[in-house]
Amino acid sequence: MLNTLEHTELLRFTTAGSVDDGKSTLIGRLLYDSKSIFEDQYEAISQTSTKRGEVGVNLALLTDGLKAEREQGITIDVAYRYFATPKRKFIIADTPGHTQYTRNMVTGASTANVALILVDARHGVVEQTRRHSFIASLLQIPHLIVCINKMDLVDFKEETFNQIKEDFSAFSHRLDVKDVEFIPMSALLGDNVVDKSTHMDWYGGSTLLYALENVHIGSDNNFIDCRFPVQTVIRPYSDEYHDYRGYAGRIAGGVWKKGDEVVVLPSGFTSKIAKIDTYDGEIEEAFPPMSVTMLLEDDIDISRGDMIVRENNQPEVTQDVEAMLCWFNEKPLQPRGKYAIMHTTQEARCIIKEVRYRLDINTLHRDEDNREVKMNDICRVQLRTTAPLLTDPYRKNRITGSLILIDEQTNETVAAGMII
Image (cartoon, rainbow, N blue to C red):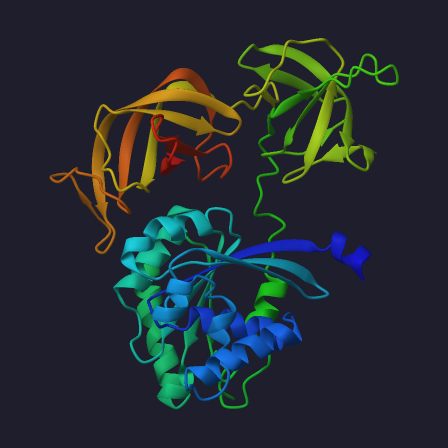
């Protein structure tokens, strides 16, 4: 069983919705019904539920880990959960619904293949639904599953489901999302989460777990543009590996084979791949998101922050970067402020030359009059860096298209950015 799990595909998904839409209950139900929790965990939440005078077992307690969350019954931080079925391994990022935790949602969603957008069947599409769907679109999450929850509270009516589906589709065509699926469910009762509902015969689609197990994520990575940011140079300095010089890192794009001609940036020197090593030995080809060590035929001076690419397909080498930023810090963005910037394995310093506009995340309109950027705001900026960065647009490659800004005095991450 363990051996097969090692080679099982990994799916990362994030949950988002308004407060009390039932995100934590949904994840608890998913874990419980797919037999992914231990008896003692179930026993613990069962006792807590009894103490609180709740009817039945509150499955939301499985994910609400922070004491403050359990007391308020809300999710504040990003809670990560892991579970596996015979078909796939999963990492869940349970992100907060409150407006003031937009930054946590951006963090949890940045690596996700799928976003679950929860909608309360009683309230339909609300402002938060639009905000979270927009952030999912901004972060280029390839697949959206709209979970229309609490169907038990609207008597499992098909008309309610169809109306919400229609309302969501009306605004989602403006978003950059290609794959959207709608599932009516009751996380509390378990309808259409892992097991098919007996209350909604009119629904012919799949359950949530089936959708997560079968959504096609093979093409979510960029297999066309070859990008290999070098993390470290491996020189063992032992007699056995006397002349070994390998460049280790995680593949950010493309398919790499032994014998391929490559270019090293920013130097521009060319060479060929001599071999590709992994922890388990040499391999013939490598692709994202594998971590490998590449050996080249020629001795070239390569260090951390350099990038190995193909001659006829190169990233943009630039010191002027246009990006959408989500501001994480309590201290507002300083126009003309100087920050450290981290992009792939490269570090530099930068100045925020201009705030082009702030995005009103509730109306999705550009606010060009008020450009003050506070915590959880999203804005478009122009940056100037001290060293050239090797960038792609975020929509083309989520790894070479993303960056973070750091306050050099406090060492805090103040913003995450998507390169335009």
